[in-house]
Length: 333
Image (cartoon, rainbow, N blue to C red; front, side, top):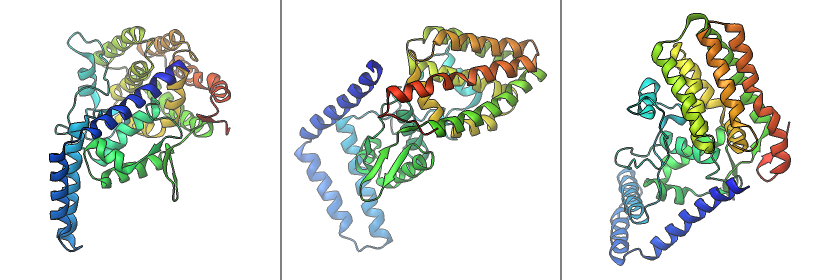
């Protein structure tokens, strides 16, 4: 509960800061905004007029975002979408100069100019916010507020919300709006089933054909970094993903990992909520060590056994979490 309180408190701080900044919004900026809209809406509702309106709205949103300074998280490859760092490039970016994984925080200082917002990047950021409880179940998502946050028009925001609805992460209620969905145990189990089946195939191939030396070194560095991140659920889950993803990339199965990423959102929400109190982090790290040892020793059956045991951990805590947090989780299994 303390962890959730911290997340909620952080969200409240953002809202308070945004409100205060809006109250200090200069008269000069407001005049500029009105002029832009007046110029745009002076056209008829044809293609040219709509383009001018869209440009005006985006310009105003960018200016407002600059004054409010709302956080926009970087387009990192959490969901495995193109357009962000991928593969070994991402690992190197997170490992640092001494091949030790570094925290890839959302507040990495990437500007909107460096990463222009688009439906994919907005979807990726909001997905991470939902998984890590920065956006809590039941919280309403306003297209206008999100467009302001990302410094864009409503069109890419709307497309990102449609994708989140398809992922089962938000509920769209007619005449009411879009809301972050509660965690579904049924959807979590379906995602766990898909992930286990695919990861069994991945680690078996890794054990049978071996993995490159750099992948081995990265996996070992990930395990060291996980030891240091035991009290930080967000950092630990990112390092956890990096560890598992390495086997897919080391065996030429990057595309399979992309499928896993798309399917495991509800699984990730339970996993994040269970850390560090619900699931012993030391046990997870030891399971990772067992998986790596089986792969390195060329034992596919042992690797399969280790990954199946690892994937079953979430089942041990899911129902208990549902009973403790009925406002967050639907016990629909």
